[in-house]
Length: 362
Image (cartoon, rainbow, N blue to C red; front, side, top):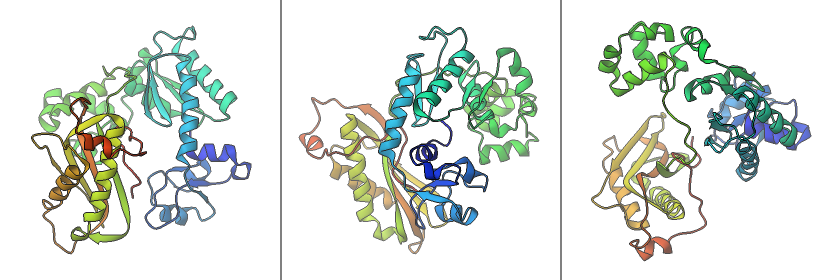
């Protein structure tokens, strides 16, 4: 979907159409959830601090996010996708992979399916979507961004060898600033230059990911579309109104642990590993984790483990922190016959978070 949250706001409020819209709470600690394309022309991007977005685009209209409404529209989009295939792998509220090798709609090509989906989204929901069509997932992802907004781009199998070499290596999944700088040290800036690097050298430098890099550079991706991906982690996090020291963090840690516990109960799963996440005042991310002999059996036990992880943070006592999070990883389905009664007693109306997700951050 194109600038999904902002597009929903513009669709539902005619006064916002054609104007720069930023979906974010106002405040020093708020971040941008979405920006309309009118706002993006000023450099406003998702995950940017809201105060910076306001400096870049003083005339932007700030709209507080309404995730209940966005989830409802996302479900409508999902129903359109499912008309064409059962193999839909959601990545978020506004993005999904589809395998249309066997299309339920009977359309002859993947390109025809993509056109039909975009037309149905436009006609029924008054929103625009961009689509990428390709032989595998990673190429389809690249293609989906190629002609945004409201675009369709196709990478045919015969075109892969010509399409990939000119691309910057940053287009490959997993190549962020750290990997990108290491590749640049090796004289590699484009996918074509990466293709020329010996696979064994990449494995020596990047481990197992080196082998993956060698395959991606050649357009190889064996990952399949998985409609029911397992939950990998459950977490909750919060950004403080003011930076606080580690010693003053116990109430927040207990509160985030309780939220995570309630989400795990709601999802019917247990996590073997407890993770504590901290963000320093200068935006450095710190994590500490512990896998006890048995998974936490109660909210209080999870809170106590998270607090013990705090004691493993070896940093100056006067350091300040802007965010804390508590998570459960190594998720397994819970055996409800053996669960402690207290586990159900702590359940509330909190919803389970999607894989790898967290609460408001900053």
